[in-house]
Amino acid sequence: MKIFCVGRNYSEHAKELGNTIPENPVIFCKPDTALLRNGDPFYLPDFSKDVHHEIELVIRIHKTGKKIQEQFAANYFNEIGLGIDFTARDIQSQLKVKGLPWELAKGFDGSAPLGNFVPYTAKGINFSLKKNDLLVQVGNSKDMIFSFEQIVSFVSQYFTLKVGDLIYTGTPAGVGKVAIGDKLQGYLEQELMLSCEVK
Image 1 (cartoon, rainbow, N blue to C red):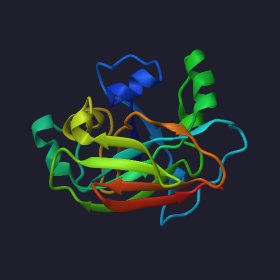
Image 2: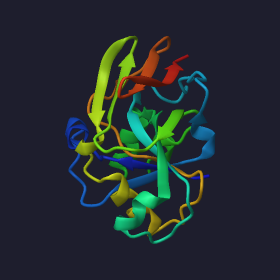
Image 3: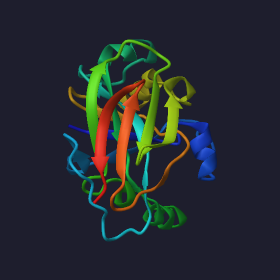
């Protein structure tokens, strides 16, 4: 199983971090050891002082494919869920200045909590994140710079997509630092899909 992630896929999030709008999807990967399931707690790593939450829509691949054309990409996923892309922002900033890859800041153990999945049936999907019962992030899939289909097509030009592969599709504005004791809850429309406590 592979975990692909898309960076800078919402213009307002790109702006809040001072990044330019990309011409193509910005892709990075996380190892399977990044996954947290079943509401398991997230333990703050000792190498970072500035870990941020990033709530994201996640699609799960259910059909193997390579070099998929965009008009057929919807045939390769049929479930959607929520995940959090925890980011060690201080480490990421250091890496970006040096022109180095982001994996140390993005792919560390436990950095990808994953909630439940539901059938994908509609476009314009609302999602949100609450931190300690306060609404901190709100997004809608129609605001993505690159659609699910565009992402699937793009990634498949470089990697064969296999059943069970996950794609974290980017985060809207409102990312922020987490601290020990924080309780995070992710919602798809009005349904609670993900819970995670920071320890």
